[in-house]
Amino acid sequence: MTAAPDYCRQIEALRPALLKYARLQLRNPAWAEDAVSDTLLAALEKPQSFGGGSQLKTWMIGILKHKLVDQIRKNSRELSTTATSDDGEDLDELLFASDGHWREAQHDWGNPEDVLRQVDFMKVLEACVEKLPGQQGRLFMMREWLELESDEICKELAITPTNLWVMLHRARLRLRDCLQDGWFQAAPAGGAS
Amino acid sequence: MIKLKITCREATQITLQAEDRSVPLAERLSLRLHHRICTNCRRFARQVQLMRQASARWRRYSEE
Figure (cartoon, rainbow over the protein chains, first blue to last red):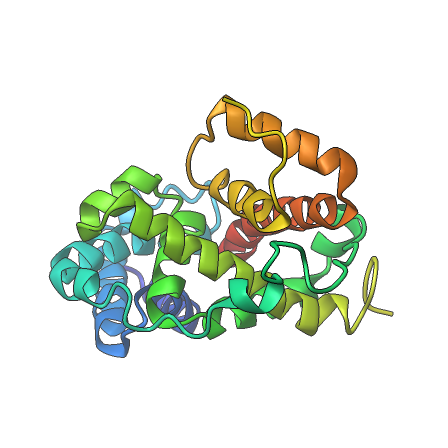
């Protein structure tokens, strides 16, 4: 079955969006290109499997997520060896005094509903995820965007649970810091004017 | 055994680990006790909760 030209155009138009998330997940431009090409090919080869009930983009992102897991598997050896090479600074040391107390008062981020319905917040969040150091970013994306369980991630990358928790701990602290600076400080308690 | 006094640093660690594994009851109780006396750690826990909700919203946003 050949795909209709209109369908091809719609698929191709989604390439930049797919590439953005592929890069965020893999942190490697070549692997990201491969995952996106595989996704577009799969969609072009089997247009009949798009039910039409859901949005085309929703369907394509679903395919992309599978292709990203394929890429992670294919490159797992390289991914597991980079496990702790790109940590960045240790935020714990900056946040806590030697007696284990916070160095500074923590901020009230306000009502989640008010914050999360703002599209601009999603853009700040994406920018903050992008800023995470490579391996922290990959693991965070695997956990939060691909929605893999911790033990699945450990298995795919052949890393220990402790290693995973340390990296996710750092990633989440860093993300929190970035959101504080990039959103809550700029537009306190409930958001942009 | 329940550790009655944990530091903010330890409380933060438990709060973050709870995102990625099931935290033992003793640690959860220590955290709850700590939250009763510590505004900063309560706020931190709410920030983490907001981040979890933000991830869910972001997944939907990425498909729209």
